[in-house]
Length: 325
Image (cartoon, rainbow, N blue to C red; front, side, top):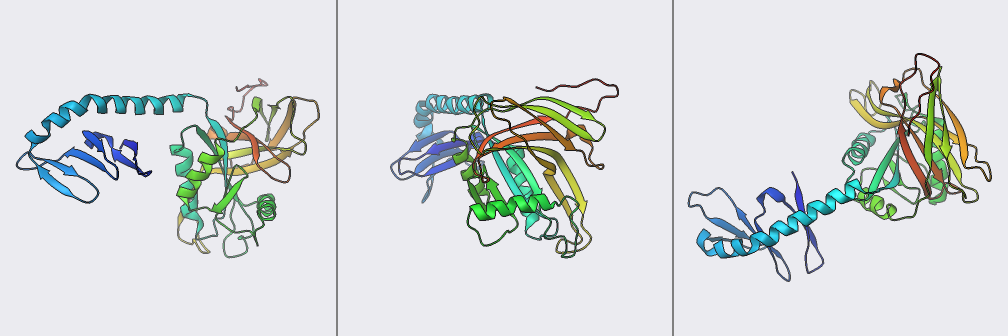
């Protein structure tokens, strides 16, 4: 269902289904919506936030005729703005979710991350999601096959930076600048929107090569990289399913998106605009839909300065070197 957005004069906002909208009237404190409904007497309902008044269609005909053209222009302008936003340059925003298959509070957060990645709800932002599985739940009834101690250490660095008492799951970190409980979708959208306005530098994945059990590539960097910044390369599995047999989620089928399967820090060299990386490919990972994510982060695991994502090329049968944009 498509919705039309209105900002009211009293500072509030509302969304209304486009297919039911005939003519909106903005008053000082409310929005009056004239809407056609199925009714035995073929009447129209005039609705406000406080009242519901039944009026004959004839009395509203003049308003409908006068407002039809105005509404048509409003809807066209809104649609054009949305299309332009989707087609224009979007700012990458890195969304990290620290999670575990052993945590009963985590499946809703995993599902929310999937919606953010699929729906891309913030105009002007390209959400690049990473589902990062910690290992400190592994001794509590279920071993998470995606867990990594390196991921737990990465979360610990955020815990120190944000002055938290301890690590917790599910935790969401947006662009390295804000953190919150990973099931708060409204907070996630607000954080992504704010992060999308932060200036970013440009990085690129210039070539990817799959050879034996590793994937390697080159990273294009800006002329000047902030002092102390760190560069990371990540191998991401887009979807996964696990049948959990024990622990807090015992008996459930868990579904994951953007699972981090390998994460390495890449060496940065002064006065060089390229860096090379090489990632180990897990034996159980099918590369067909896998992606490589590269991001540049401020020192001490601060704000994200750049991020980019690229599909993994199909493994060549000969010695050819596949390239991606």
